[in-house]
Length: 636
Image 1: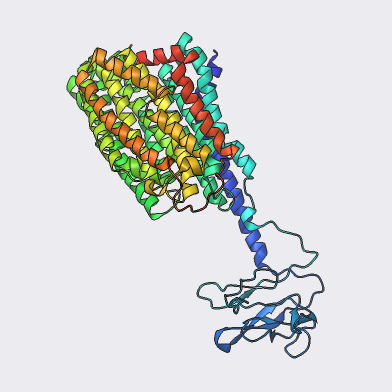
Image 2 (image 1 turned 30 degrees about the vertical axis):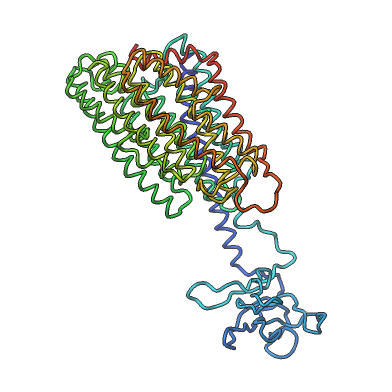
C-alpha cells in the first residue's frame, strides 16, 4: 500500500464527515440568504406601470372603531359611496369589502379584488371564529405592540412568482437522505479496506505518526461505520421536522456528521493528547444533540450531560498530564511523550506511583464517558431525551469508543505496574455499575431509560472482560462491543417508532405491540432478545467467551457475582419488555387493522439484526483481525 493510499484511508473517516457537515452548514447559509431576500420582496408592494396610486380603505376595529389602511385596488376607488368604497360586509362579521362586480346568492355584495378582511373575524356558521384569511388582499395579524393591521396586496398578473420563503434554499428531501449516508459509508469502506491489509502488513501511520491504524483501530472503525449506517438510514423516519423545520433538520445533520468525525478521530489518534481532544469534541457535539428538541427535559438532560462528562474529561486530562510528566521523567523526548506506541514500548521506565495515580484518574474520567459508575448519572437522562438515532449512536458506539480509549491506557499501565492493579480497579467498577443497572432496571418505567440502563449493564460486562485480561476475554470484549452496538441501535430506533405510534415511552401505557404493530413489535422483541444474550446473536457468543475466560483465568469471585447480577437484570428487562409486547392494545374496544411498518423504516432494523446474528454464527474474514486486536489490548 502506497503512502498516499494510506494517508487517504486514514484521513477519509474524519474528512468526509467534516465535509458533509460543512455542506449542511453552507446549505443553511444559502437558505437564510434566500429567505431574507424573499422576505424583502414580500414587503414591497408590487405596482404595474401606469397603475393608480394606493387607495385608502377602512378597516373595522373592535369596539366600532375604524382605521385607515392602504391597498392597491381599482384606480377609481375613492372615499365615498361609489365603486371601491369600503363598506361593512354585514353586521357581526368584522370585515370590510368594496362591492365587486356582482352579488352573492343571498343578495349581499360579493367581495372583489383587493378586498380587506379584518384580523378579528366574526363567528362562522357553527358559532366558532371564522378562519383567518391569508390570501391576496387579506389582512394579516398586527405586529406585537403596533396595534395596526397590515394588508397583503393582490399579486398583479404579470408579476413573477416567488418561491415560498420557508422553501428557499432548502436541501431537497432525497438529497438530504443520500447526503446523510455518505460519511457512514466512507467510514465503513475505509475500515473494510484497512481490515484486508492491516492483519497481514501491520499497523500503518500517516502525517508524522499523528494518525495510526492497528487492528484495534480497524475493528472500532468497522463498528462505528456499521452502527452509523443504521442510525443515519433511520434518520428520515424519526425526524418529523425534515420538511416543516428545515433549519433544525440541517442543524441536526450537521451535528450528527461532526459527531462521527470526532469519534473517528478518537479511534485513529496515535497521540494520547489528540485522543483526549477528540473525546472532548464528542461531548461538545452530543450536548447539542441531546437538547435538540429544546424541551425543558431535554435541555436539563443536556446540561446534566455536559456537567458530569466535563468533570470526567477533566479527570482524564489530569491523568494524561501526569502520564506525560512520568514519560518526560523517564527520558522520553517531548515530541513522543504522549505517543501511544512509544509509551507502551517504554512503560517499564515510568514512575510507578505517578502512573498508578494517572491510571486511576483516566479510569474515572473515560469511565464517565463509557457510562461506568460512579459518574454514570448522565446516561439515562441523555439517552431518554435525545432523538432515537442519536441515542443509538451514543449507546451503540460512543460508549465503546470511550472504553477503547481507556483500553489504550490500560496497556501502558499493565506494562508499568503489572496486570493486578488495573484488574482490581476495573473489576470493582464493573461490579458497581452492574449492581446499579440491575437495581434500576427493576424499578424502571420508561422504555428508553430501560435501554439506557441496559447499556450500563453491557458496558460493565465489557469492563469485566478487560479486567480478566486473557486473549479469549479480550476478543470477547471486542465482539461484545460490535454486537451490543448493532442490537442497541435496532432497539433504540424501534423505541422511537413506538414512541410516535403510542404517543409515549411509558412502559405502563404501551400494550399489545405484537398485535397492534406486528413488524415493529417483532423487531423490538428481537433486539431485546439479542441484548439478553440469546443465540444466534453475537452477544451470546461474546458473553459465553467472556464467562468461560473468567472462570479459567479469574477473578472468579467477580465473575460469579456478575452472573448473579446479570440474572436480576435479565429478569427485569424480560418482564418490562413482555408487558409492552403481549396482550391487547389499551383502550381498544373494536378491532383495528395492524399498523404496518414502511420499508424505509424496516430496512435498518432488519439489517442490524441480520448483522448481529451473523456475528453470533461466525466472524468469518474478521477472525484474524479480532484475534490481533485482542492481542494488542493484552499488550502483545
